Image (cartoon, rainbow, N blue to C red; front, top):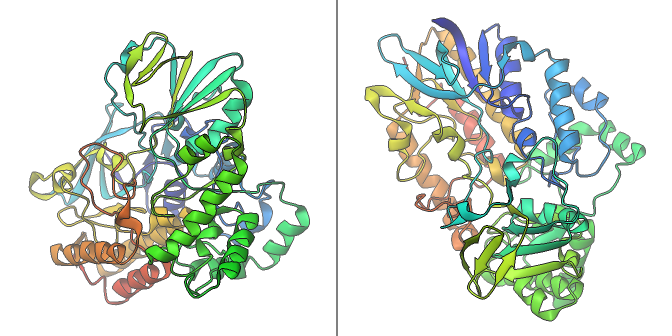
Length: 527
């Protein structure tokens, strides 16, 4: 059996940087990636219009200043092909491919208590022994295909936005149905509508979306940012979401109606996720939140010609309790003659025919169905691997009532198992790249500490884990996040425990991680 210091599962941005750090430490590592190339979520999500909702200059690595200066982005918000190109550039620039085995999924990882090592097996029949197991499987990488009775009856083409064909899909002349109106749908619907003969959008719950106002990233603008890249990164690190947008700490309720309208209009024109920073209490006060929600609903009514359609597209849930989307022409798409909105609240799906979908009120005949139904977020990809810790306990069993971690980095009963941006870390509530880098560097420093101290294993204690889960949920309960059924809570997956999974507050989290390390990894047992 081959032996390495560390096995890393996944070759997205987390896996690539983890491998780079391990190699810098002189450790042997093997990365397994089920895809044919690097990039993680940007390898799989190739649907029309796929792009990041964090500006490109921030959605990038900062661990290497030369890399920051040499790479040039073409748009304010980079599209999937460019982000994938960037991931490939990083893999080549740092010569990482030699330690990555593609077309390989990890099936099982069992902790051998006698050897104090992880025994890892793959779907290729290979077995390895490793001291450390690092899950770099991503937060949004396990596609959620809803089980709707009779869907196998449909004989046309079906696609999921998270598993898009690499060769692309030509919708020209076709009748198309998109099921779902989350982020991937909001990005893809305007593009599909331009090609399809007719597009039916099947919506269960409308989402808030702010225009991205995307466009070319002018060279002089990019250079200005590069000249003060450290300043941009510092501002991002001090932001609650790890993104350097303008953050107004004032209350929306103190401002006058005219002041609020002006602030919201300014944010709308700026575009993107920065709208959430309009006032400091939008995610804490229902009354404050209502002012932002009504402003966005007003914009929807202004954009969409048909008042009935505008009403159906207008979300009534708390603004921001689900991830706010950034779009290019989404609401205006419903003014097209070849686009029909179907309200699944009014007419739920009853079944399927060979040629289409049956709702409570009509038969929708289509050639293609696109499932834009999101992911089993935070835990789905991790739990696809059969991970077994001390005493034969499986991680699936341990997390049956919801994920339990300390700092999102480790879980008791599973020594030397590290999770990058796991449940209990800020992860999806932040710019993922700085969150990934912070987690990877913490893990790397931890391994270095263990080697220097002659320690073989590290494991979160039950007490620290229990206290951390409590803190994560206590923080969430102070906000409006738990007020709606979001994938932050796992509410999009039938039977998944309703537990708020991300930690709220990037700077406080980073400070806590540093404190734990400085206290000799307090909350972890080393042996």
